[in-house]
Length: 327
Length: 238
Image (cartoon, rainbow over all chains, first blue to last red; front, side, top):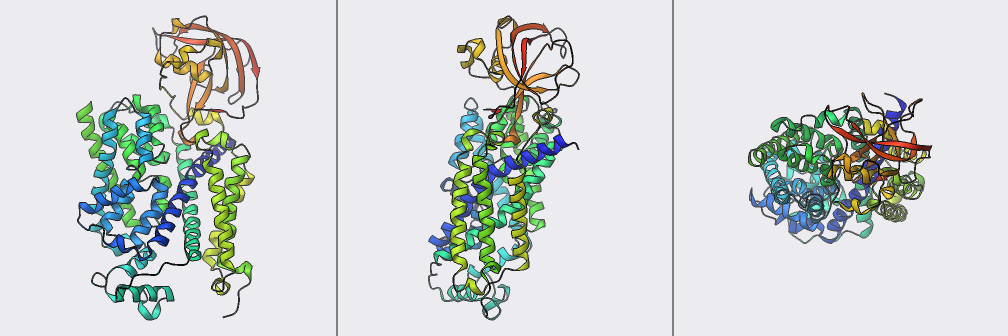
């Protein structure tokens, strides 16, 4: 690898990072505001638990939170910590990056002459999110979620769902905060609003943690896309199935935010099949190289693998179906 | 429990790390590197994020002096995370981006999106390289433009099996989605200019057989004057 290639990777890394950090901060601030304004997240626990209605509600929350997929992770984490039903949180995590006003407006601005795409993208995103929200809970929460997230989540879940033994530390071993939360959950008293300082502290910790993961993701994405010539991926443009697979791979590698990926797709839209174009616009917001680190904060490796495999399968099926219809 | 010195408190470290990220964003916003990395419409987000992060760092520093934090020393893991943040931030601040446009463009397929025809309104001498390429995509008959005067600038992009083109990068969001637009050039005799060299070319358009497709013709720039120029301050095209 020559110095020119290294310089290019470094510049690509900086471009991806500087573009994503503002969106990450927006997500962290939304999550902090939710934690401060609705402590204990009582309303989160009242969200629907129905296997279909839950993910659909989560997906609809995207309209209220204009963040792309990086900003989405801290907000989804807040939903899970607040005790929201798993399906709702997952529906939000996977569909909200597409189902928000900024992304839909961007898609329309990029493809004003393809109205089918403006309908198919949000519908496809909801289908993928519902599929994943049905698939992932097949793993028990203990195997799906990271340990610290699970511990926080169990503190606010009603006792009828989680036994005292499952709560880390319980009343005796845990810290003061955990004990207070546990006492509140047990007594049914309404939780107190945390002091502003605590909310700031939490936001600071969350941003720093996610920013480092984002750095790693951007570094991997910048290296991979500099080493794999993009022309290889687009060379199969006309073949129905291969083009979908190639564009899915491209979406994973390029790792641009969902708020701008439609403009990127515009550059090669004429060279690929319609199913492949939609697959690119559906898969990138759910999983890509830049996101792997961030999602690792929520899911254990097994959950991450299931997410990737499930998302790829659903997107491939949708892409195939679109090609049957449009080609 | 004894009081921990200010510099060894976890909250102080967090404030420091946040301040470093704020410095990265603010410095990047004002040292001109954004012109190389992001499309102009996203530029305001970067200093705004810097200001918000600086405010968060100040709030966090104030938090570090509260009674609870005075007894909370940083753990080894927090220390490592702060050190890693510092390392990344210092590297980004110290090594500004200097991408090789030719290297980047060499791995990407050309941007073939056409324009809505606005460029027809522009007189030929005012069309940029990107305007020309968009115009040709929407109106591919090369004979329409033969003999038109050309005044364009761009970098030298080697093309496999052909002589180098003069090219620009179009960016829709950030450098990751940059794709090249280029025009073939009938270079004068002598050594062909090196890749990545920025040139301003004045000349005319001519039609020649397309070496990539037999039987087809393409438009080529015939330079009358070639002048090396420094890389423009805003090298990316929307």
